[in-house]
Image (tube, rainbow, N blue to C red; front, side, top):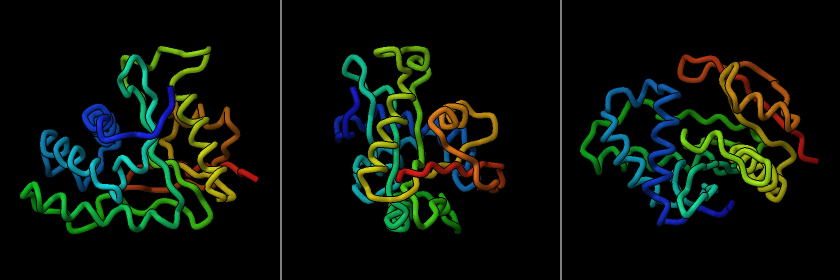
Amino acid sequence: MLRDATIVDADAVAMLVLHELERRQLRRLRRISKEQLSQLLFVGYHQPNFRYGYAQARVYQNQGVAVGVAYGYPAAVEGTLDNQWSALFSRLQVTPPQQLVVTPRALADEWYLDLLTVRNRSKDKTFQQKWFDEWLLGDAIHRAKLSGCPVMGMDVRPGSPLGTLAAEYGFVATQRRLLDRQAYYHLRLKLT
């Protein structure tokens, strides 16, 4: 079942985001331990204006547990979502990185899908013949259309399963980017 994330989902969603950020290997987060990052994401999840806070999240719930999460927002609000990182680092008494943890990625006309991930144990499960990540991506496209933005965008690593799924939905690679010294393709889908 797809639904808006709630405070109750904090543990499950924070762990999903933690695993995804570990896969992305963000250089600016390497100085902190996995436990500290987990705490940071858990506390940040409760902040409505945090990039990975509950207000930007939609979850796929299976048997009462959030097994997948998608984070997205219009490009116009992306700048306001990263103001919480420094406060969270201070709260955990960890020296914050000198640069932004996550650099702004959305183009001006986009509704941007920042993160979409499904728990490993649930990746091979379906509901009504659709994979959980298909449900989440379809829901993200629907939310992007409702936002009024003409385009939906996302960044994927070359050869990633999300990139393959996005291609099935009609996303097109428009540019190659280096994000945190790693190669990504910026994909776009016209919504109008």
